[in-house]
Amino acid sequence: MFGSHRIYLLCTDSTNEYIKRLLKKQEVEAGTVVCTVQQTKGRGRAGRFWESPPGGLWFSILLQLEMSLQQAALLSLVFAVAVSRGINSFTHLPCQVKWPNDIYLDHRKLAGILMETAGGPGDEKLIIGIGINVTTDMDDVSSTTGKTAVSMEEFVDVPLEIDDVLEAVLLQMEEYYCRFLQEGAEAILSEFKKNCLHMGKEVRVNLSRGSISGICVDIDREGTLLLDTGNGIEKVYTGDVEIL
Ligand code: BTN
Image (cartoon, rainbow, N blue to C red; front, side):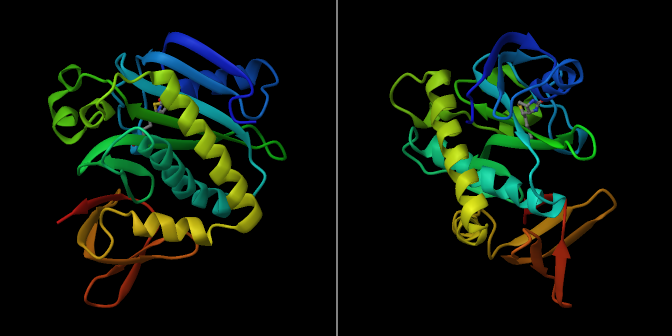
């Protein structure tokens, strides 16, 4: 089902936006994938710009929202584990995940996920946008992103085909999605925690207003990050984690 229908583009503003425009014009099958060589207005979490030159895997997948929004929030962690599993089959160093849905390799960001909802009441959709630096030349990305980001190529000894990465990632995404629907999130959350870059570490979470610091002690069954601030356990629902 994931990728049963595909649209390949050379260039678009953002594959998430492309799907949203398509939805306004016509019926779009669940599982549809839109993949592009480059994006001119790639979007990241929290309204950030996502550098998307050729050499990366930039794609979005459309799903029918068949669960509560609270459950859908968990999907963001589920897909982070799935994407990292897909990538692991190529790289000699295993990926790690960063809450809520970043994928890291060698302590630098390799991939990110932007999940958005679309459609109206009774017909809500999920758009999952995934960006992976596959053979992206880090000199092509802005100096700030370039320093903190990494591409798969650095950790693979053979030439990489972006299409092969797409297939591997889609396969894992579908598998983890089915597991989530059938068994719930518990086992996948354990996997997330086991591969989490900052579990047990002192972190600062930058929120839209201010920040909060503490030891990252757990992620609960709702996918909420739990921080021990020294004055008790604080729940963090959203934000950017920075390891101190
Ligand atoms: C993040 O880590 O901030 C999320 C990045 C998500 C980037 C992908 S690339 C394909 C899709 N289209 C977009 O505009 N964004 C997502």
